[in-house]
Length: 125
Ligand code: 5GP
Image 1: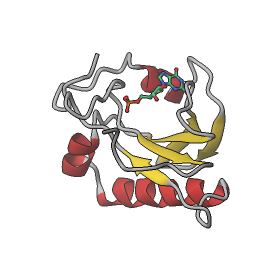
Image 2: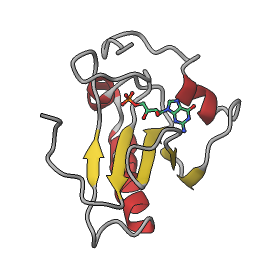
Image 3: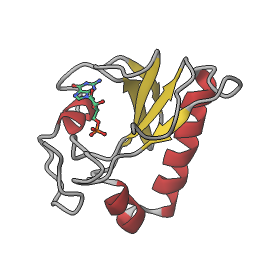
Image 4: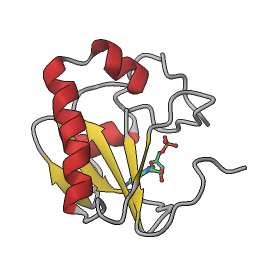
């Protein structure tokens, strides 16, 4: 079920549990501000999720409450992960689902990185 982008942060969500090391992930990158790991149900040959380490529900929440250092660190991490995965030259797509119409399912901000094949039009028609 899609979540409410303005809901209070629920620290039992699956990405909070991954951050606490309670459940495993296939980690590809970690620094002070961000963690990146492979999506459990990939929608493209490369499908990586990048999450901030702070407790933010959505892009809306993060862009409103995040510190300058957290936001800069997160944006730089997304770019670094894509570079490390060799996705810059062939190209890739970033996606952040927000709230109900965005069909966000996990209530901890995450940016999807998709690549590894031509990704077609931006949205399903
Ligand atoms: P959303 O629809 O919220 O933008 O995307 C949530 C993503 O999280 C989905 O692509 C889903 O496959 C992924 N996901 C859900 N649970 C897990 C998990 O336990 N581990 C990993 N690695 N990905 C997960």
